[in-house]
Image 1 (cartoon, protein in one colour):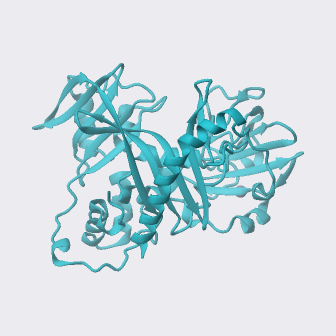
Image 2 (cartoon, protein in one colour; image 1 turned 45 degrees about the vertical axis):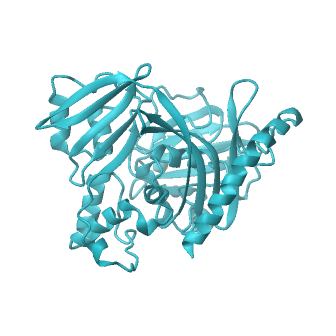
Image 3 (spheres, helix red, strand yellow; image 1 turned 180 degrees about the vertical axis):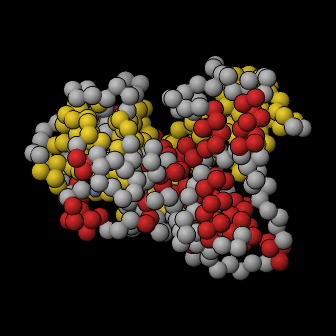
Length: 425
Ligand SMILES: [Zn+2]
């Protein structure tokens, strides 16, 4: 298990890229095109290393493993580009007579091995029922095979420390994207992963890894996780209830699901890079009674709580704006959107986490960002200062069963936390 950031092969890969290029401007451009993660000037920190001779002779990175979901309204070209595949290979794949991406459907998770230059080496996804489609490079083209998938679940433990972003830490720890995203969702009622992350925040996570023919195919569900944010520890353990539905609870049985999400932005590799560059939330809030999230145009904006759409139209300096009425006196507003979610109109019901629109810069905005307002009885309030209702904790009957299940997982988290701390010293 690569606990230590400096010993991760990906870390060397990144360093290789950074050292080989002459200027940060080039690094930024390369980084963006290469793997979709924005390496902005100043955020690409090169730490002092005690480099031994062997390490400096390590050749340029062989490959990156990327995982992403095919989304509703997505195109194969869009997905391939997010996976870091270069345009030549995208074109040759789309022209390919075997049409290997035909069975791709919304929600399917695709794993790709991509070289540092963006050449696609292999790609696989589970299509339909228990069938895995694998695409491998063969000369100038690609060969595709289909086989029966027999998954075997293994519990995996990983831990990491935030240096620049959650995904950089996930890469360093060898953690799949889907697990990083699950963590952001699990703790999304307590931590705003776009604004609250701090350098040296750390995480430990126990999750299922699904194997196909002895090879890791994709990550499954997170079983337990700990996230230490600004010195405060949050823990979560998965519990599947008697009704077949499950959820995440703190070890004492408190429900981690909150009535409101802390961030209205969907957490993704692309949106995550902006998190650490923000100013303290209070200053900004006082200035204009809202919270601004810098994010690339098109980033998905989510309803932070269940409610009814009260407004979805253009309004002066706000540009395209959505206002949602929630329970009680609460309402939320989302402004400068580039577009509304299809079918969204006044009177529509939305659930927490539903996509309602996309980041843009309509109205009075100097760059793409989301202006978010949290209102109580129509008056903007600082979302951090408002006490919000929490979801139901586990009942007494379920609590006993949960505790029995949670204890060994909590012990694993304890062990990981200690190991992780030792690695930092
Ligand atoms: Zn604003």
